[in-house]
Length: 303
Image (cartoon, rainbow, N blue to C red; front, top):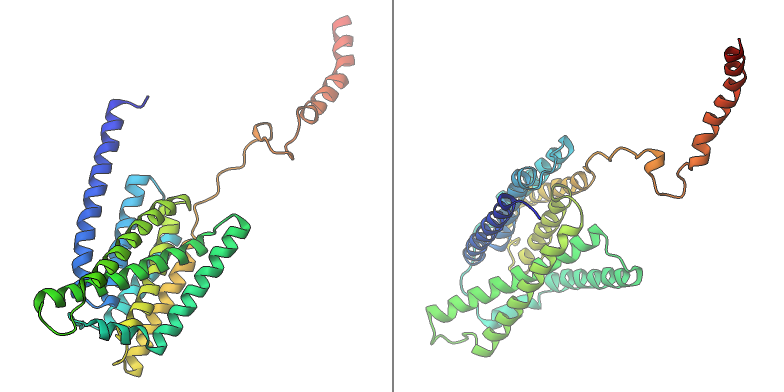
């Protein structure tokens, strides 16, 4: 059994981790309501990426290599560029009719249809192959987070509209609010399952930036399109925005390729693989040397 000190340390780390998670979730919900979707996505991504980079070497004992550092720098630079050029104003009141109009806008319909079709393809391929790769998992994880952000912000702004002016025409009905709240709860549970499953994909320094970065990029793209946060972009601003996206994409590739150094290859007699050298092949040169030395030893003993 582990020492009592180690067990207490483990429980303390769990409590601290859960407390940080709950505090972060509370602040995240406030950001979703008050800030534009693109700003909320980039701020959440940047803070989580910084925390992962600082805490993984300390808590998990992982080694932060130069390649990891370059990947994180590219991701942070791209995320900061996207956040700086994104929309900085947000509406706090929408009616259900306005939401339906946003749901049927052609840019959003096309982008969401493509995202869902890709998710179905990846899920079907994973079932067929009985395996889900890191990039496919990152995409499904990102889509889950994007739907959660979109529905959560929609729920909050409709709830705020109802509380600010309950008698206003076009306020959301209780049945609609209940349906949205139920979907938000289901997606939150699904997100927690994805967070737990993400620990099976290797080191936090290598794969977590992939999950965080892909999620932020999809949230910015789909939620920004839904809430029409790109309508006032000038050509220069759009160029800077897309440059930030490109930096994030390069950072994703760099981080996922920044694996730790491979462990040293085991000695042949410790290797259980089929191509390991067997004991007979190791003993053969020793036996030959002994046979060659035997006559000389006998002659020396006789003299």
